[in-house]
Length: 311
Length: 143
Figure 1 (cartoon, rainbow over the protein chains, first blue to last red):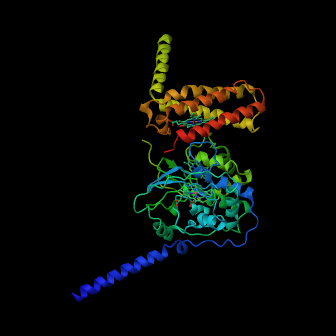
Figure 2 (figure 1 turned 45 degrees about the vertical axis):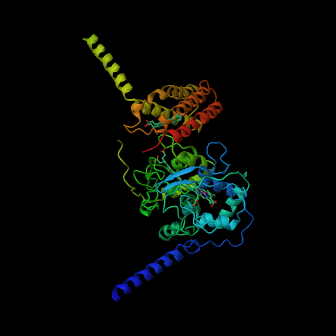
């Protein structure tokens, strides 16, 4: 009897400790601390505009059903295995958008996935890639967004079943899958290679679509850029490593051409979600598209998951 | 003898036409492949890699216009899946929008039907090829 009671007490204590541990470890400030932003020079709005295009922010945040991609009223529904997300209003509207945010708030959201009220943001917002942008770049991007028109109205709330509706759960996810650090150039590589690596892995967030994901929705590192099922459940995203099933036969020029006009070497034109990526990348200078191509051509060949057979 | 051969050949041709008709997926992919091939030539001219030739240029727009006319009828309900089709379900969910996209492609192609200068070609070719990605974005999905 006594033994049983002791066992019970031990279990309760352990459970409480585990809970406290989880609670502490999943605290947004513990699992994803804010980057130091320090003193920043005056914002470069042109650079912010370039990063806005490279980041494809409008693809998710532009108000759906109208043509002005700079109206960032949000509302687009994003399907996922965990439920439906709705991209929020990120226009500079003071009540409904991010008009009241400071630079630090924006950097925390983009690089740490934490909102100004201290809650975790869901990684459906690809801050897992955007975190590679250093605070200076993020401040430029923020300054550019602040030049756009404020849009009234809020997006509908996300439609997520329990337990995915609990933001704290994202803390556990971050513990497992999220590392936060800005891009660090590789001094042994050329400047253009580093520029390409930064654009592909950071703002361009190519891997967010061109990789397979595990049951918890995190990119499986071994399949990075090697293709996989579309994250929204429609179709297949191709391998863009140097695999025979990927871009092995493509020249740098051909990759850069695809990013500018959407044309593949055999003059097909990419569609689906890649079409918007092309429209955005077309706004970058040729040198940036060539830099991305240079980086992609330098990647090892990786075999992705097998593509389902056509029926 | 020769007559029989001719008749047989004629029958054969007729038969392949019927078979192609009965396989709209192959037929629409052929039409699109022709569009792709024409675009390759056009891109070479637009970039100055090939000499501008107005007859060739006009032929490109004719290929576009022919495809735009022919395509909408090649998506019967029975062809939603099968072959290696990359047509998205949206083709059937939004037939009106799909047909309108081809009508726009046809109009933009018509603008190039009589091009006679490289500059004119570049403008018309640029406008017509905007349709490729715009339509594929909505009505096509790689599986």
